[in-house]
Length: 136
Ligand code: HEC
Image (cartoon, rainbow, N blue to C red; front, top):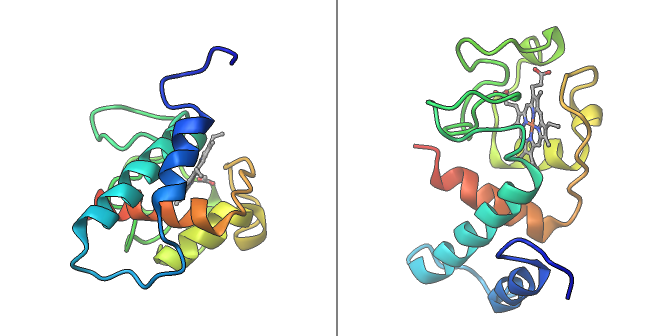
């Protein structure tokens, strides 16, 4: 094994393997929900956190994503959005954020966010679960 941060692909693989993706998820199943949130946090750390803070005390290159689910695009106070995102006139639903992760340039052309291209629906789902957990 090469040296890697604490939660490498193996541990993440184990988390993903734990998730019974074909089974219906019941709202009251908190343990399953927590597994998704934890996995989503690891994925967010790997793919998004270098540009996005989730803590209002920390500034970041991209807008704060705490509370992003249900927020109007381009509306986090004080963040210097591109005109493209500011004028996009969309509200961030879970589906919208998935589409954005998959192809942000396609969804809203001309923004400042470099294309991230998260196309795996499982990865999208987990990141969404994490973002929902930090959105009121
Ligand atoms: C290379 C830096 C970078 C990475 C990596 C990145 N983003 Fe972004 N993101 C940005 C920037 C910059 C903006 C603001 C774009 C603008 O104003 O045009 C943004 C905007 C957003 C927005 C819109 C927020 C709002 O307030 O309207 C969402 C949602 C978002 N990113 C989600 C993600 C997710 C989820 C990931 C990880 C899968 C991610 N981003 C990875 C830089 C990044």
